[in-house]
Length: 415
Image (cartoon, rainbow, N blue to C red):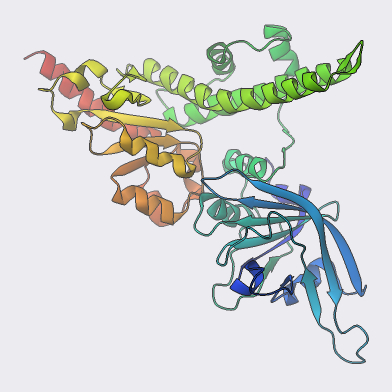
């Protein structure tokens, strides 16, 4: 992804903390955001009143996104005054604005087409932290006014484009892949039907030239990234084919068929991501001769993603628990990272590997307090604060720890 890529989507962005009077409809009926002086550069002052089409989005870590369509109104409340102006930004009541809470971060994003994307991100959530990183702008915690950024040309470069694409996807923007179009390659290999995720993952790896032993962090990230791009190319091809064929029957439009198709696309996307991540982890462990058990059953029928060196050692009550390792694998963290804490009771200090970047310090501090070590591919570390980076594990760091414990097992077995 090229430097300054945000210019392809946005002209400007402004952010502020929502106050109680702005977030609580029962407290005030004004429906106007305060501290809008810096928005003059975004929206201009040459017209007394502008009605701006807007899409509203409420994002949090533990809940589904809330969306609504509507309008924002930018107007001068003192237009007829000979010397004074008083610009205001009016917002409507909808599922997003009525669900916002004091302290949430409000992002007003002016898109390239002149419409608005209004995002409310829950305070201290992962997505809030990610949007701060993506736009490189934070609210003024004391003034209650907007902080605006109208030059988006100096945004993070290609080294963290994977994280940027993930965040843009969360806010409803499907990025245009600038890299090679893999459609002919994947369709030539698999035709017009998706193979199993394991087959697709293996094929994606076969197209990447990298030595996993020399660069395990780069290998994992490039394998997953390549599969994602190939998947999107094949998905677009298959959707285009279906749309060209249409949803018609002898009785008219096949509405149920359309819904089934849409549901299958959505379900395939959700299930593929986690499975492909685990596929690439298994391939990495196998290539580096790391012994492991994948999704074994432990206490209370829980199934941790990976146990090292094996589930047999885990079940051996004489085997030292400090020589065991548990690794949870989640492409995105959200609140689901806490699930890992309930798995593999014999192991006190657990590990979680994720592709999620720019996780909030609030979340990582809780992980530290709960004895959960976060593992993130090295290429994504730059999206975290310096303090977080000093604590994070890279994939290589994790593998080094597992290798030491594997050496213990070798000597244990020789006793």
